[in-house]
Length: 437
Image (cartoon, rainbow, N blue to C red):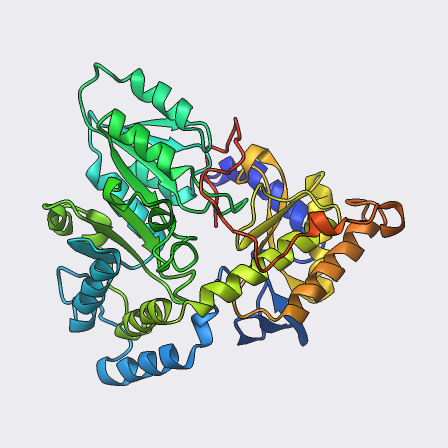
């Protein structure tokens, strides 16, 4: 017996994945050529699982700003924000984030995971109650575990169930904090945020929205679902990450609460972690400016998301409940999902293999994330390749056995409205571990 014996079942499941071919935990690219293409074992592959929604990882202005800061301020701060880890550009990025969201204050964390971990474990304490969507990201679950509040899950995207659970706390002391996400990372559906905000007001709760996958994607100014749903005045905390649309690494929280800055001396994951290198801060600051200056990035992302979603839908695949940059295909079994993912990688397409228990309803998924940087030709190549492999593996019927899709059903891809809040499919069960991406 060793202290690691408790992980034998997990190791067995991992070995099953490894034995089927490629190992998703050790996929190592020889070279990343662009936001949409890389080289893997000498072969060019289309990148379709990187969350690089706006394609800013190779944006020349972001790269230039990062290089300039690297040369001026060195490779890192070597300290936490309360020690020696606050430079002028850290404070400037926080001012820019607060201005972008129209809030009083902002805090920058070293990762998006750490932002949820720090904020959730700090703002809700013993005697308080956190109500989280059942499909929440792993960082939300972990942040709740680290704190001392009572944690209550409500059914995914179900404001009525949220209200019922709040009603049971009617006479209980303590604060209530509701936690939802803008776009959920596994199926790409959005929260019914207007309805959730109404429940929040009715029960005098606080509301935190994690916009990790919706920053730069939703809203007329790219501020996320909170902006698109028109509920910015109802949201007390917005958490996000720099590792998706902003093309780098890091996280943040913004808030209009007047005493928000006290968290700088109360939040342990903020206080005791080294701050982000100045080069990362510089690239993120520029990426935020690109989001504000170039709405065409969101427009191209919109078109690509529709093209992939509707293309796969037309071929007979079962997808998430609504169009978004996250396009996930439901698989009939874990074994088929693993075989499908390996076949796609062999055919030059990289996307994410998502397996239970870290998926809604414990359904295995092939998860893709579209970028504004993808070309129409790349999207069409992906659709054709996925269709061919899907037919071969029996996930969909061969084309000769499928009816033609009518012009009416195909619709006008460029004119369709995307990502209307409140249209998400409801799931009655969700993993305790939380979604990983």
